[in-house]
Image 1 (tube, rainbow, N blue to C red):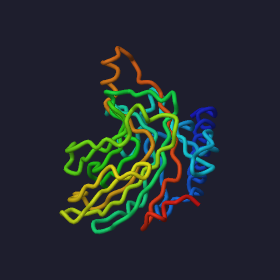
Image 2: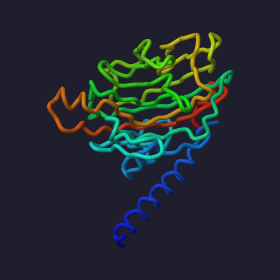
Image 3: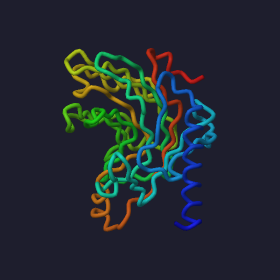
Amino acid sequence: MTKSYISQNVSILIALILTLSACSTIDRGNFSHFKRSLNTKNYGYSIIEDPTKTAPTKMIEKFEVRPGDCGSGSGGSDCARDRERSELSEANKSNYPGSEFWYGWHIYFPEDYPNVYPTKVALGQFHQDKSHPVWMFQNSNGGYHLDDQVHGRTRKYYKLIDESNLRGKWHKIEVHARWAKDESGFFKVYVNGENKVNYTGQTMDAQRVYFKYGIYRSFMSRYKNANNSDKVPAQTVYFSNVKRSKSRKGLLPE
């Protein structure tokens, strides 16, 4: 094992520790801590001072995915599954059947953010422990929408933000959810204060739900084939004030 190899890996480890340490200083309401999911590239996740000067918090979270960012780990290999990502994943997974919470985040798409449809891009998702996602916030053909996958496949798309209004501004997303395997559940979504989704019924089918956010791209080959390209363009997205609370008021920034 060469000195350069050891030095490179030590540098990566130090960068990862510093990233997670900084991440823990952000006010997340009653969320537990988050960890990076598969991709650990230094540029993939950072906490920076808001370059837009219009976020609800001074410090924001920047996610970036570049062509080839398909890491691997205990969760499998993105490279082998036609995927790329830079995400944070809720570590504690403390959303059980019968629990009810408010979730909130602000999201910003830079002016040069490219739409890479027909590749599927998730920018926030409620996943299940050892099971499939149930609610995915995605950018595909037409803007930012909610994908209902409670039964393991898409049942319905809810339009949240039109593609023409997506970039160059912060959007406030609020979710009020009651997690249930029966009809007692609900999932409500507010975008910039306006109620966009008012679903009632089953909201999960496993034992625990957890939140993930950042950039998660799947079916990379769809874009490559449609555009005769060997790569999918890089994407950058900002998040601010990502929180969970027992009340809507608890989502307000400090």
